[in-house]
Length: 117
Image 1 (cartoon, rainbow, N blue to C red):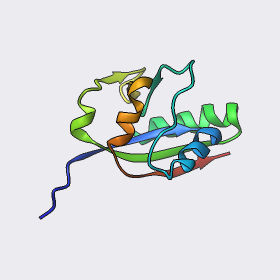
Image 2: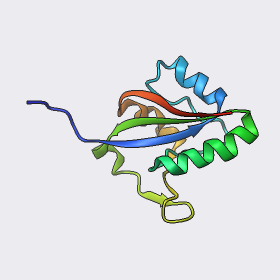
Image 3: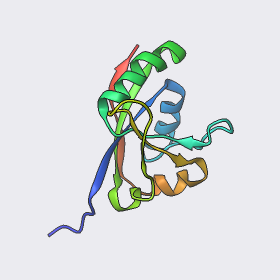
Image 4: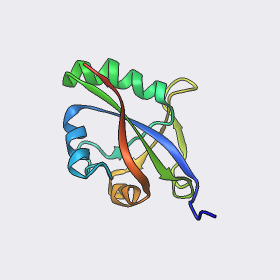
């Protein structure tokens, strides 16, 4: 019998600089936000993450990546789902000051699942 708590799969579109910082954290967390980034926003579906990585990150950073990771579901209940556009444009808005605590609830490693150039 396992004591594993339920997790929720999240995705994060990212550019090469942020991805290098995640790698430096052994694929176990997200780097602190920059002063002009008051929130960290993982997304709730892979298609939305793909669109951002492919259409925005590539244009601005030369490459875009989609990462997938698991977070303790009970912990995530503190962040209401935000609809940032259409029905499938769903995000969680994690205040930058809570990112260390958010990282502590990531289960397993952050994995790159798509790459665009």
